[in-house]
Image (cartoon, rainbow, N blue to C red; front, side, top):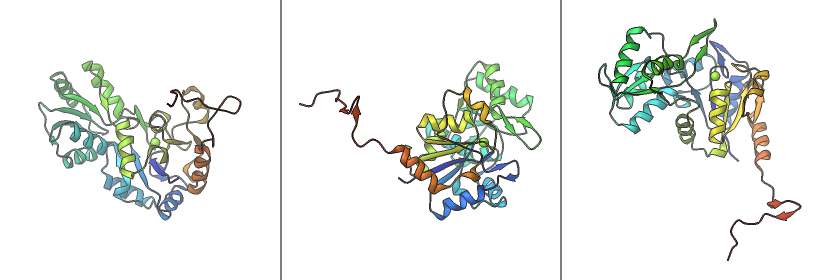
Length: 284
Ligand SMILES: [Mg+2]
């Protein structure tokens, strides 16, 4: 079977501005074998071009077409829900560009949506303005619900933490479009032209990458080069199909063999001691 990949970046391809050893080799292998793949990120700050530039500087052979951000997912989703709508945005370039190029106008009163993304520009006045608009009827949309995000020096509050402030103040729950939302994971799979069975997610976070993949019925590979430790895994009710120390351990041809072998159904469906399974409805 042909397979393709949805690959998280932070904690999988790089940590901060450092390449994870072997990530460049794995991606080069995919390109050489013409295997479809997309980089998926829950960070809405950068445009896909900015992301592709960062990847190139790290030595990853990727271009804009290989990048799918939660900002793009959010903008496309809103354009489908309400074409040529309006939004009040708390976020940065990646989100603003994506909304603009999907026909949205940015406004500071009576928007259709209040859209929250990552950013360092957040302040109390913005929160107050957003709250007024939400209470006035604007719908609250989150690019993602990640509570925090690892940085080189520790942690910073994530989009989910800013959204929680507005949810708490308004009493209204946000709709989130980023991982693990099926909106993002299904759109990405379709963009690659893959079926559910052909899609493999590689990620470092159980709550987003692996949960989203499991819910969609994709194959999932957890890498331990980011936010998760092996000893944390027993507390989850779901598990990845495979665990690797890092993406540097993975090999495409070997993964295809492993997943294909696991997917092969028994030749004859049997029930109990060698009897054929009885159909639920008798054939006439
Ligand atoms: Mg990650």
